[in-house]
Structure formats: C-alpha cells, structure tokens
Image (tube, rainbow, N blue to C red):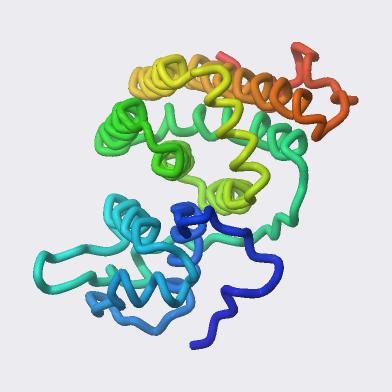
Length: 264
C-alpha cells in the first residue's frame, strides 16, 4: 500500500510535530486502506510517527483514541493489534476543501444538534457512559492539543450514538477541518482569551445529561447553545485578528437552528 501523507495540501504541524488530530486522521486512513487482518499486529509508534510525519506523542494519543473506540487493542509487551475492517465505520463520503470557520460553524450548527437529538433517542448505556467519561476527561486536561483531540472524540461519540452511518460520514468530513493550522490557532487563542474551560465542561455534561434522559429536544438545544457560544468566541477572536469580515447570513435569526427539529 502506498499513501501520500506529505503532499503540499497537508496541514503544517506544530513545531514539535504534535498534532493529535492529524495523527488520528492519518491513522484512520492507514487502517481503512491497509490489508492488515483482524487481530493483525500494527507498526510501532515510532514507525507510525515516521510514516505520518508527526511526533510520537501525537501517535500515542491517536492510538489511545482508537483503542477507546474499540478499533484496536494495545497489549503490554506484545504491541498494537487491529480489530479488523468491521471495527471501522466508513468515512470520507464528502470531501471538505479548505474553508473559513464561519462556513464550518454554519454546517456544525445544522448537523450536530440533529445528531444530539438522534443520540437521545438511540444511545445505549455504554454510549452515555463513554460520553460522560470523555466530558470529565476533557475538563481535567490543560494541554490544548490533547483537549482538542478528546473534544473531537466526545462530539464524534455523540455522532456515533446517533446510529446513522451517513450522518457520521458527514460529521467526520466536517470534523477534519480541526487539522487545519489556522483553525487550530484561532480556537486556541479564543480558548486562552476567554478561559472558558469550566464553562465548556458544564456544557458538555449538560448535553450528555439530556441524551441520558432521552430528551431529544433538550439535547438539540443544549448542543446548539454550546456551538453558538463557540461561534461567538471564534468570531470575536478572528475580528481581533482581522481574519474575517462581518457575517452576512442569518446566524442570529432565532429560526436559524430549528430546521428539522423534533416536535413533541
């Protein structure tokens, strides 16, 4: 198998090669396109780091994320083993080219509340337990790269619990924008400026609580509120940076988020 991980369109990495989202995406790509059999042994962290052009710490975190998803298992003293193609859900049906954060947030605001609603109807107890554990874990982290990785895992776990493969593929396509250097930089500055870690944790836990109560309306509203606060923070930061102009669309329209909402 040959994979071109080093063309000019690939995101630049942090100075220490630490971008866990990049490592996670490249690892997913490797597993989806490899011929490693179920329970087959995978390369070492060092080999993956060299293959993907990232740091070993980023690879280690990506492996930990996939292990938590059940895609692979790591056995002390033996190595890392692949769960097989059946452990992977196909992704990448939609190709998202580079875009600005306003467009990404517009899509997220329409997609993720619906996923939260579906998750409230379909999530199994083990899904909810994983979401809650991830929300708590994120609140305890101080390293931005690691927080960003597990934040993506929390939102993906909600998308997974929604039980719709096409929705999950769309989520994964949009979520890949997290790898973009400019996007990550804006998010980090916005987070540092607003010091919103505790608020974010409370929002995450509230979303999980709504899903656990099987309340799709509240789950969708909680996700919308969470993403709107993120959007406002990003807009404020990019305005300070001079990166974007004013939003021209109806992002403040009260009906903006309610397309397709469940009625009860």
